[in-house]
Length: 444
Ligand code: BGC
Image (tube, rainbow, N blue to C red; front, side, top):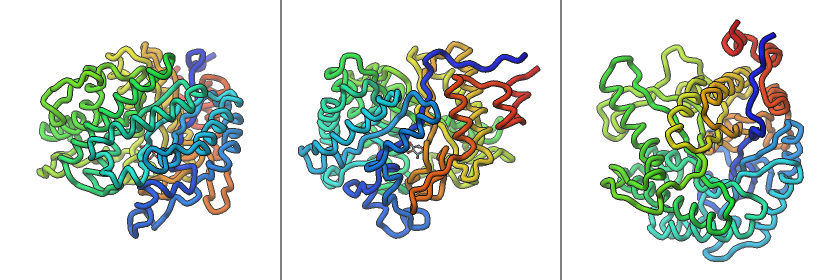
C-alpha cells in the first residue's frame, strides 16, 4: 500500500490574517483614508466591517478548531493601540489580550505580526516611513505592545512583506501613499530595515524566549525567454532588489546597492530566528527598455494555469515548484523555515484543493530533503478585504458574504482540516479532492 506523506511531529498548521483585512472599522489608518478616494479600489469597494473580527473573531476561532488548526498568524493594528502619538489605548490592548487568550484556550498558538501594511494617520502626517523618526516611533509601539501582550505570545513577525509594501506604495503607486519615486522607495526600505532590527532587539530584551522574524514575500523572478540574456539580467535585477537585498542585510548587516555602499549597520546582523516565507507564485520577467520598470515586465508562462487573478493579477500562475525552490535557497541560513502565507484567489474553489495539495507536496519534498520547515499558514481562513482588489479576489477556505457576514465552507476547508488532523496527506485524500495529482504525488 502506498505510504501517506507525513509531516514532522508538532508541525504547525494554521491560517494567516491581517488586522485591517478582517477587523472592520479601522478608520484611523492610512488604508481607510485611501479607500475613500474614488478609483483607488476595484469597483469602489471599502473594507467597512471586513470580517467583523473586532467584535466576533472568536466565532472564526471556533472554525479554526473545526479544521484542527494548532496555530494562527494574526496581526495587531497600530492605529488602534496607539491612536494618537504616545497615547496607548488599554481597551484595544485588552481586546487583543482577549483574542490571544481565546486562541490559546482553543489550543491554537498565536504568531503575531506587528506591521501588516497599515499605519496610524498621525504617523502618516508626521512623514510616514520616509521620516527618519519612523524607526523610533515603530520601536516605541512595539515595546508597549510586547509589554502588554508578551505573556500570551512568544512568536512575532516584525514586518510583513516589506518589499511588497515599498513596491506597491513607492514604485507602482497603487497603494498609499501612491508614489513612484525610486529614491524615496530606497529611503523607506532602509527605515523598514532599521525598524525591523530595532523591533527584533526590543522584543528579545523584553522576552528572552521569543522567536522573532519577518514575513518575506518571494516571487523567484526568472527570465521569460529561455536563453535570452537580457531577460535573465532583468529578472536578476528584480530578484536582487526585491528579495536578496533585504534578506542579506538581515543576515550580515550590509546595506547593498542601491540601499547603501555595502556599509554595515551592525544592529541588523542576524536578526531573524526563523525565515518567514510568503509564497504565491513565480514571476517570469521579460526585458523592456524602460528604467521605470527596472528594465523588466512580469509575465506568466505561455499556456500556464492561472488563478482568478487572471493575466493582470499578481497571484496568478500555478507554480508549486517555487515553494520547494525557496526552501532550498534559504537552507544556507540554518534557521527554521515557516511558510507564513500561501494561498490562491479562487472564488468557486475549483482550483484551490489541487493548489493546496500540490504546494504541500512540494513542501513535504523540501522537508524530506532536510530543510527544517516547521509550519504552514494558509492564506486565508475567510474571504477578506483584499487591499486594492477590494472584495474582488477571494482567498478564503470559507466564503464570506460581507453584507450578511454569513460564512460558507468551501470544499478546501474540509481538505485542509483533514490534512491538519492527520498531519499528513493520504492517497485516499488526494483521490477524493484532486485525483489528477495522484500519479505525481504518489507515483507507482
Ligand atoms: C499579503 C496579504 C494579502 C495576500 C493575498 C500578501 O501579499 O500579506 O495581506 O491579502 O498576499 O493577496
